[in-house]
Length: 186
Image (cartoon, rainbow, N blue to C red; front, side):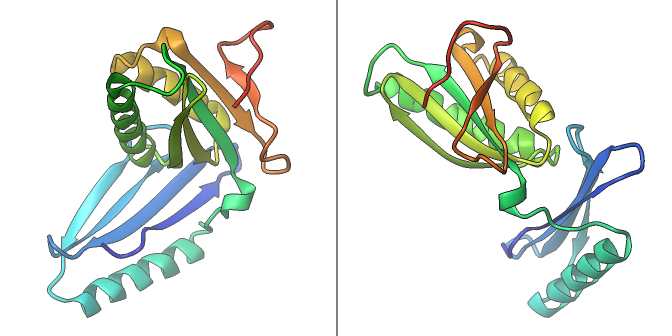
């Protein structure tokens, strides 16, 4: 698979849309995916007979994005989001590592098909499973994480979500559960 090309555009009403494209060489196709960030996207698939044809389509896609006012949002301009699950043991068990794999897979798919961003990494330490994500729409990302935790039965009662701004990427502030009380720490 060639590198994923992803671009965003905010309209006059403040709605953020995205477009992305990639080449799946094994399948012999170029996939174009697009939609409003936070909503399930639509995709189209075009068969290609060569790497050169795929590259030409991806170049045309990038040019069309530019012409239509879509642009990449650099990592440094996106919000960092962390989904954190409280665990029963400090170092994690086999069950916790299974939860980690399931949660990362579910969040990766959910975020990808909705243009919400990407999963950066995950870790188990100090009795917590932390999954770090990057998102251009942190409010929608927080809601999506809670939906995924509920739908995938990832024990949403143990979930906390925090967000750090691009200006202060290490200063996470709790966004879920809402309200005063529980502090957030990595």
